[in-house]
Length: 431
View: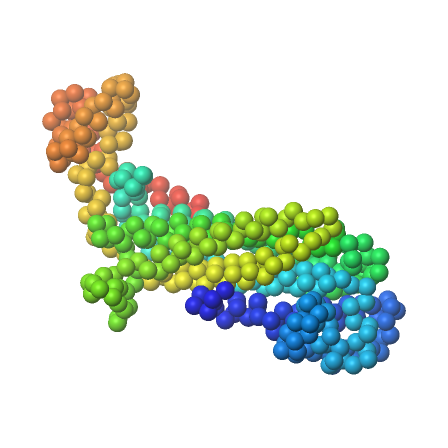
């Protein structure tokens, strides 16, 4: 987690202050529940609630000696609370605090990411409707295929990000569990009511079977979801990078006044934001692998997952949060060139209408094999000689004889390809 790619709102979630504050709240709520059960005196709870606090520097000093972060924390809290602190952590184990806290932090992070996705969706929707009828060439294998609209391109991204939002909401729901079940998760020294009480107050559900830790398949689901979102983000970034190539230049990132593209070449305007998002996606995806490997722990628990999560939880959420905000701004400010799109569409002199001619020939009674041969031999003249496709078809006696001039010219109507744009938009965005 580096400052360059950290928004304060997300970075705060993983700051020591927030983490220890959550620990303290878990411990205090557990005391409240224990007092209701009569395990500890009721009169100590107001003292713990009022005096409960910690000193991060002091925790670091203690941990350097005891080599245990939860014990260091509890020692610091006891120095603030006084004698009543002996009732804190009754029947609990460290994982009760650590795992429940991590769930709270991941829920907080997921909520930020859901807000980010909403911003991306809003930007995509606005630009999709803006360019609903902006005709451009569709490409397969990077080669001109058939006409589409830039609005349809953006609608495809919107639909994918919508699915990602559903995935993230589900992963958020599944990570929102807490465990206050004691050593090996049997509740031998703590009543299940304490877990229910703490979880309800923290906005979590009790983990059905926690062993001594919350099962890491829940965490893996969240990290894999973030990896999928990152891949979708990269798909958009790759499209923009391609469209900004000098030879294409159908769209480009906004280039602000005073911005410089190269230390050596003053003319450069580079797709730096999209390239940055591609790099971010690579990193975020890499973090789902250790999350998957964390699922297989020994018996009721080990701590091989712990050190990994200290890295990947903040890093993945911070990086994705930053990236989604950047993506939203990139889409919102994207400069689109409809005239260049039209120019590029016509670059291959009508080749993009070949399928309609092929189908018309089959409808006219020509076999599919012969139809393909007739269309392709004229198409190759465009590729190899720079000929005009429609002109070649009109001059081809077999094609003209089967279709007639009017039918050939009709096949070059752009509206034929765009007649169902409204239908697709209704599927994506509703009525």
